[in-house]
Picture 1 (cartoon, rainbow, N blue to C red):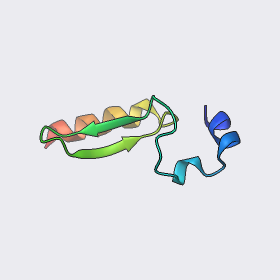
Picture 2 (cartoon, one colour):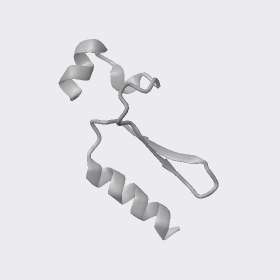
Picture 3 (cartoon, helix red, strand yellow):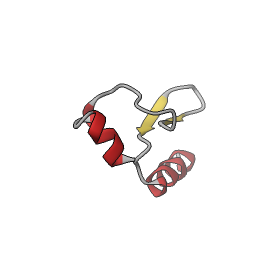
Picture 4 (cartoon, helix red, strand yellow):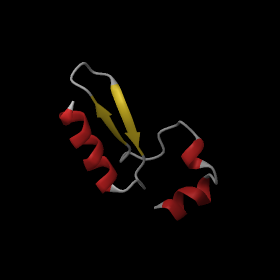
Length: 56
Protein backbone atom coordinates (compact mmCIF):
# COMPACT_ATOMS: atom_id res chain seq x y z
CA UNK A 1 0.00 0.00 0.00
CA UNK A 2 2.87 2.39 0.81
CA UNK A 3 4.22 1.99 -2.72
CA UNK A 4 0.81 2.74 -4.26
CA UNK A 5 0.28 5.83 -2.11
CA UNK A 6 3.81 7.12 -2.79
CA UNK A 7 3.22 6.75 -6.53
CA UNK A 8 0.29 9.16 -6.23
CA UNK A 9 1.98 11.50 -3.72
CA UNK A 10 5.63 11.05 -2.72
CA UNK A 11 5.01 12.83 0.58
CA UNK A 12 1.60 11.34 1.33
CA UNK A 13 2.57 10.63 4.95
CA UNK A 14 3.17 14.35 5.59
CA UNK A 15 -0.09 15.49 3.98
CA UNK A 16 -2.98 15.72 6.52
CA UNK A 17 -5.63 14.67 3.99
CA UNK A 18 -7.26 11.28 4.46
CA UNK A 19 -5.85 9.21 1.63
CA UNK A 20 -7.75 5.97 1.96
CA UNK A 21 -10.88 4.78 3.70
CA UNK A 22 -8.76 2.59 6.00
CA UNK A 23 -7.28 5.53 7.93
CA UNK A 24 -8.00 4.89 11.60
CA UNK A 25 -8.62 7.36 14.40
CA UNK A 26 -8.27 6.60 18.09
CA UNK A 27 -10.93 8.60 19.93
CA UNK A 28 -11.31 8.91 23.71
CA UNK A 29 -14.66 8.62 25.49
CA UNK A 30 -15.10 12.40 25.30
CA UNK A 31 -14.81 12.35 21.51
CA UNK A 32 -11.29 13.78 21.29
CA UNK A 33 -9.02 12.38 18.60
CA UNK A 34 -6.03 10.93 20.43
CA UNK A 35 -4.14 9.55 17.45
CA UNK A 36 -4.46 9.06 13.72
CA UNK A 37 -3.13 5.95 12.00
CA UNK A 38 -2.50 5.69 8.27
CA UNK A 39 -3.40 2.47 6.39
CA UNK A 40 0.30 1.64 6.22
CA UNK A 41 0.82 1.86 10.00
CA UNK A 42 1.56 -1.34 11.84
CA UNK A 43 -1.54 -2.74 13.59
CA UNK A 44 0.64 -3.57 16.59
CA UNK A 45 1.14 0.18 17.05
CA UNK A 46 -2.63 0.67 16.94
CA UNK A 47 -3.12 -2.05 19.56
CA UNK A 48 -0.47 -0.50 21.82
CA UNK A 49 -2.12 2.91 21.56
CA UNK A 50 -5.51 1.43 22.47
CA UNK A 51 -3.97 -0.43 25.41
CA UNK A 52 -2.25 2.77 26.57
CA UNK A 53 -5.52 4.70 26.37
CA UNK A 54 -7.33 2.09 28.49
CA UNK A 55 -4.48 2.13 31.01
CA UNK A 56 -5.17 5.78 31.87
